[in-house]
Each structure stands twice: as structure tokens, then as C-alpha cells.
Amino acid sequence: MNKLFHPLELYIGLRYTRARRQSHFVSFISFASMIGIAIGVLVLITVLSVMNGFEQAMRDRMLSMLAHVTVSETDARLENWQDMRQQLIQLPQVEGVAPFVEKSVMVSQGDEARGVLLQGITPELEKQVAAVFKHVEQGDMNELTPGSYGIALGAALADNLNVEVGDSVTLISPPEDIMASSELPVLRRFVIKAIFRIDMQIYDEGFAYVNGEDAAEILEMEGQVTGLRLRLTDANLAPAAGEDVLVRLGEQYPDIWVSDWTYQNTGLFTAIKMQKSVMFIILLLIIAVAAFNLVSTLVMVVTDKEADIAILRTLGLSPARIMKIFMVQGTLIGVIGTVAGIMLGVLLAANLDVIVPLIERLFDTDFISPDTYFISELESRIDPVDVLIIGLSSLLMSVCATLYPAWRASKVQPAEALRYE
Image 1 (tube, rainbow, N blue to C red):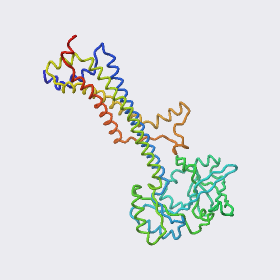
Image 2: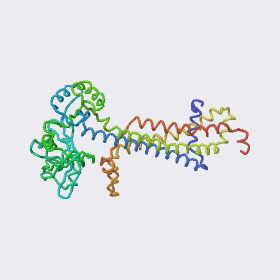
Image 3: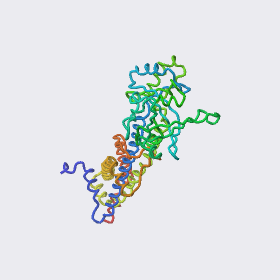
């Protein structure tokens, strides 16, 4: 018989999770605590997965457009860049090196005008460092040949200007010091050769590409470029690669300037990580509230079971074993709530790409505004480490919530509890 009830604390604790018929309210409170824990875990997993997906989407799309490392000189005018490129392409971690000309200009069509960051590129080399060629919706960026005065616009910019492939736009380049100079802006008509969509507003609305030689001509930079962009075998090697470039080329080019994508976007990704940490703490409080509902639940159970506790004490159970009985009950509620929350949270986070568009269509709204969040689609990435931390935190709070009621149960005096039985 002893083997049947071994361990006794576990057996009685599991039995106590089901209240007696006259104590359905206790069962309801236990169920409510369980649901509260599950909802808290579900929300926390979903929110952190969305933030992970947002960070990953931002990183991937930015890296598809930005160079891992950028090399230039302090005056943003690099001469004899061909020799420097040959030296950089020989570095073991470098996959590609492409020259670029860069300046902020205006693009206008009719009564509409927009400010953009003009990128003068060499198409056959730019393919080695950026993925914009893979995101062309209309036309062909390979048609940005020298002397063609062709231009490639982002999809949002093309919509704003109400233009398409084959139309013409006017590129307006102001003088370097527009306030002090009496020079007139340079105006040049360009024909739209391609329209690309990165699905990131900052690029779809704010970037325009032309051939590097055409850009150098209108910007009076013949024979010069703004700098060189490097693509590495691994984006995480960017800081080390930048240091390597400085060491190798620093003596030959004393005015060299090197930057990498981690330095250029430190503020953005630091803000995302900080926001994720704050959200984790705030949403963890939801689980804490639900977990500590177990305190009132178990106190009611202890009151309901005082006679049983007295009998068990009379039969020889020690106070420590009485504590274990109620800790088993509270922990079981926490385990069920946590497991249910994890399963539902992972299921929800994994299907957000289907659920969110469905809700947006039903209510005719957009949850993700590209003007605010830079991206137009909600993405989710489930991190197993986050799920593990959330699950362990929920279980730990559930166990802590059982300590006081279990201690109170261990202090029940048999004589007092059985006086009126």
C-alpha cells in the first residue's frame, strides 16, 4: 500500500488540485490563476518574438543595402581609387569592393519634388556589395550605363512622383555651400530605367541610383568617387575588418577614413535592444500578478483543508511534509499554466504572418505603418533562449507564490482544527 501512495506528498497534492464539491469557488480561482499565467507567458513570447523579428528584418534589409565597411577620405573625395580597390579586394574576408558617389539631391516631376540620397554606382561592381539588383520590380538597373543618364528609383518615391519606367525626372543638385555660394543648382533630366522595392521606407522613398560616371559629371567629381564599399564573408567581422584596413592602408593613405555598419547604426540597434529589455520586464509583471494569485488560491485551499491537515499531522506527517503537499499543488498550477502559455505563444508567434494580415483586412487598418516603423510587414522570430527564460521565470514565480500558504499549512494545530469537527 505504501508503494501505491509513494511519494505521499505528491499524491495528496495532486488530489487537492480538485476541490470538494462544496468548494467549486476554490477550483475556479485555481483555474483563473492557471489561465492568467498562460496568458502572461503567451503575451510575453509573442511580443518578444515580434521584436526579434523586427530587429532581424531591420538588420537583414539594411545589410542588403548598406556596405559592411565603407572606406573614404576625410574630404569625401577619393582619387586613385582603383589602386586602393585592388589592395582591398585581396583581403581574405572581403567578397567585393565597389566605388560609389553619394550626395543629397532633389528629384522632381511636374509639381512634385522629393529629397533623396543619390547613389552613383558601377552596376557590375555594385552587385558584389548590395542586393538592390535583386529587388527590382520594373525595368533593369543594368541599363544604368555611362552617358545614358538613366536613374533607378524606389517604389515609394516613384509613387509619390507618379512616374514609371520610361518617364523622365529632373535631378537638382545644389552647390556644396548653398548659403554662401552664388552658383545656381545643377539641373539634369534623367530617364527612369528601373524601380526597386526593398520594403523598407527609408530606402524605397529616399534612395536613387545613377551610373557613377554620370553622377561624377554633374557633381564635378570627374575621376573621383566618394568612397569604396566592402562586402565581407560575415557581417559580424565588420569591426575587425575595419581595423585591418586602417592598419594596412593607413601609412599609404594618411587621410583614410573607415566606418562599418555596426558603428553607423549603433543607436538604432541599441534602442531596439533596450526596448526589448523594458518590454520583457513590464510584461513579466503580468505573469507575476497571475502567479501571485496563487497565494490567495492556496490560502483558501489551506483554510478548506484544515481538518485534513490536522488528521495528517495526527497520523505522523511532519510540518515539512505538509508544506510539500501544498507546494506540489501550487507548482502544478504553475506548470500547467506555463506549458499551456508556451505552446499557445509559440503557435501564435509562428503564425503572425497569417493572422495579422487577416485582422488588418477584417478591420480595414494597418498595424505596421512604414512611415513610423521603416518596414511594412510584421515579422516574427522565435528565440528558444527567450522561451526558456520566460518558462523558467514563470515557474520560479509560481514556486515562490506557494511558500507562504504552504508555511501557513504547516503551522495548523491539530487540536484547534479538529475542535469543531
